[in-house]
Amino acid sequence: MSDKGLEIDLLGYLIIGIIGIIILLLFVSGPLSSLLRGTYCYFYTKILQQKSDYCAETQTGLQVFTISPNSQSELATYIAGYSISCWRDERPVVKKTIICYSINVNKHPGPVTEYDVTKIMETQQGCNILQNSKIDENGTLVDYPGNCGNADNLDWQVSGNAVTDQQLINIIYDATAGKITVQA
Image (cartoon, rainbow, N blue to C red; front, top):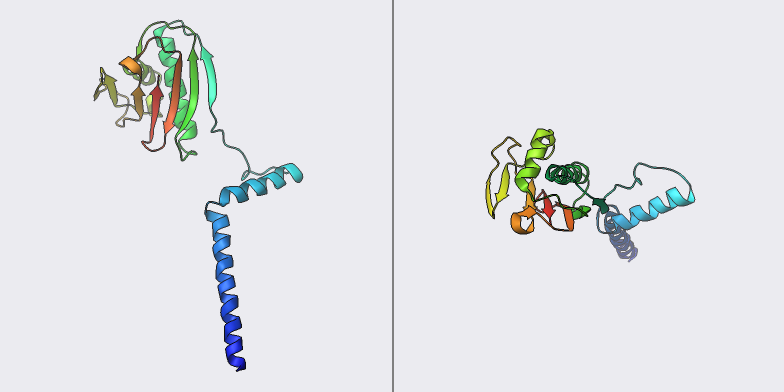
């Protein structure tokens, strides 16, 4: 009789132990991990006034800039620079699609196409960071005639295929496609 009581107690402890391990795993690697991290970092940095690399914030928020370019090449340089910056800074740390930069354009110097942006990237060695082997010409994807790498990592989603009078340009890291999207 006492052996059965011991076995039932042991079985109860095993079940409670397994449930505890499952809950621990949920906290460490599951959907509750961000809650656990946030709670830990709040107490560690705010209450204990300590600094930790684990709690360091990565910059993944939207940044808004206003520009007034004087030439088409200056506007293309802005678009290329922000695209390269988004690719370099956000791609390694972000696992979701985000808008890296919103660029308000106050002054339009003339139409800027994906070719113009890729040409700036090529001449400024930006293709070493962000490659763009295909460009959108009048709705058709064609090979870029220069040398900007072998990958097509820049997606051009601009109305009319040229930035002409659009007031807002978004530079987006698309995690699903693994590309930078220029949207205007």
